Image 1 (cartoon, rainbow, N blue to C red):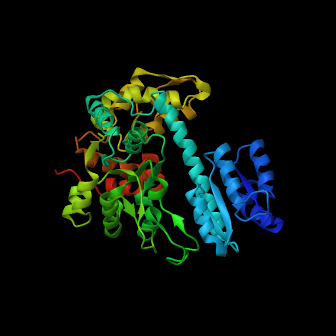
Image 2: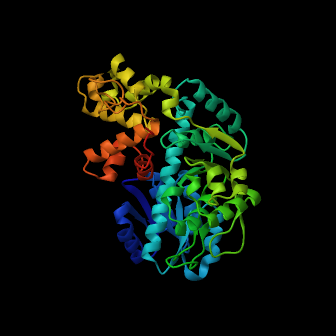
Image 3: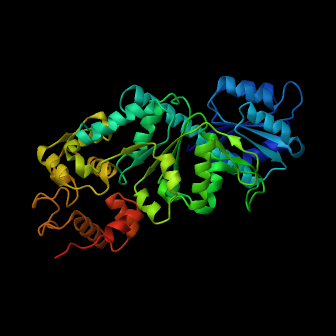
Length: 447
């Protein structure tokens, strides 16, 4: 949310001014000195975040502001500010719908951290509403009608109504998160939150706190309590992407959540009940990781109640023309759908797409960004995809190597083209750095 709208409610003008200075970098801050003025401000326009003092002179207090926001702006998070000795009142406000609380005197880092999390929740709520509208229009699903994809459709339709965990497997870029969202939006939980977590992007030291939350002072830097994503996803779906990257300690805790339906925040001993459907995804072979002692077998059984496998794009090349048409419409300039020549479609369908659907979309989007004619031909796509002088892979396939060797050669060629810059090579290939390393390390074909 690039420019948030924030309302600060406090009878102390110095506190209001301080909060306005602290939150100013996040967006436009409006002040209100009491609940009555806050009600007027809320009636005048929407806010993305409200911070309100708990104890204020009549008429009303912070709970009055909270109830007014929930009545008028139900998607807007409310953060309650309270004196240090009134924590019990702050906890009561959370039970009545507040997003979080802050204790006076103010901790600058805590204020910014809580505000950013609250604004992120607001963004996710708006994103989920947009996705729900896409579902109602029938547009939130993988594009294609190949037999392999039709099997995915059938499993999604059957599994959506249940509450059991789902494990989605497939290579990077095949659309695992889109399938997870489709499961959520076709389930009885569709009105609840959908919270995605990229487990591969979170360090092991922070994973526990991210998932389960923590108590104030539970570790260095924990200046305030916070809820984890399991609590934030309660009543909805938690999508754990790249579950194979989670360490053994957190795996044990995940197993307990799936078995008992409760979590323990870091630094607390009292369990908290959560009502969450877990959908996990991975591009790794978890059975191999179990054999290597890197993944718990009992957790795999708990996650893999329903298994959905997304085929790579090279195994459903008959879907590529439909995907190209779909992406051309999505990224068209001025809403005018471009024409894709049959020769361009043939060359796109012949390529192996190591980055799968995500790479295909980016290639089409880049081609449209540079094309001014409205007609996409082979020349609009980068080599070796659109090289019209030679068939598939532009000279890399002449000795008929294996797919792994073919991918390795192409990755090495791209890396050489960008002067050894691995980040740039990964961007051009539309894969992450881990996948780039795997492509470069693929064994050479046997002679």
